[in-house]
Length: 252
Length: 276
Image (cartoon, rainbow over all chains, first blue to last red; front, side, top):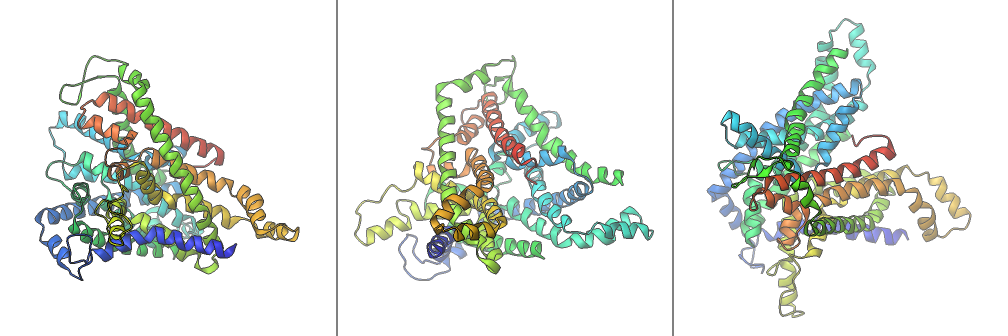
């Protein structure tokens, strides 16, 4: 039976990884069609020369960096507060924000922004995308940082307080350094989630704030396109590397 | 100490109230209004949007969404169980294998879905290869159908099944298995009568974690189904774009959210804890 188990595990790992590996391999195909004609970098070159793709990538990076910075700070503080004493309302709200279907979250944010902008006279744009991303990244940050806090010895804080440190000093000089791997791990995770989001982003983005997933989505729907293979490969390996680092930090 | 905690929770609370609770509250108000001519909403107040949810057309779409999610969840259970069992018994390699399961999951849903489109479309790798070997003349219609959507969902959310199953299987007391073996149980009987019943909590948690995102999925059905398999997520999106019926779209959204909350509540009530 254990041989059968190993065999099925091998098949399942192949199922999980082969599609991406095959896609990555084929992104180096010289031909525009699905017939192998030899190795070539040309689709990568084409991707880097595409002005629309470059602008979309820059937008995605700006959004992901801003959303990561804000959600990491907010989420870390929240995890710290929850670690001191659990708040059922807060954990329930965070869980709810995690399970709410993306399409519902996107629609509700769109309705909210449209309603708000009638009074403020603002338009949809990069800023609305950043706000939306912050709201769905917080829960992921809280999960990762809270897991780290649960392995942190609370008596260290008490010792610092007993020795005359203020609460702020204790947090800044004792707790925070201990949490750093968890916080960096959470930030990397938030970045990948933000960078990859399509559903919510496409709903709250303005005309001038197209992101990379939005461009890729449109290209994927239009049909086979070797340039998409090349960009997909870059995304998989770029984000994959970040996730590996993030997991490593969590295991520390 | 109490004040520090409140200051720490405040930014998150503020964000969730403005960017999560308020938007949902606005949707609730929208369901009671009339559709505007160019999208948006107008007065007078009405309950029609809620009534339309019971239109047979939308009930059948809801039923289809539930069955797609149920079939995907069942397949995830079927595939996830051996994988979780394998990882739970892998000893020192456990973490490596878990990373291998999670890595594609975190990477990019869009790219993972696109990878399958690349394999399955008419001019895709599988059809091209089959045609080259002469097994088929015309490309097989692999993409843009019900099973393609299921495949995409199973591929997308399998890790959500493997993680809780793995956690339950890993905690299982090995002496129970030894006892079964000592008492003359064959491996398959042990699997069927000891391991499977004991892993029920993991199965339940995994099933809910997979079912919820499958039910509300938008990206996968849209790309893999090519607009042919209409599920609730697509209908909601359509109300806010082409159909320009925001009030009804809001009612559909809240109905979907209510279903998701009910499922979450069932899980939380049983375990007595939240997802965090």
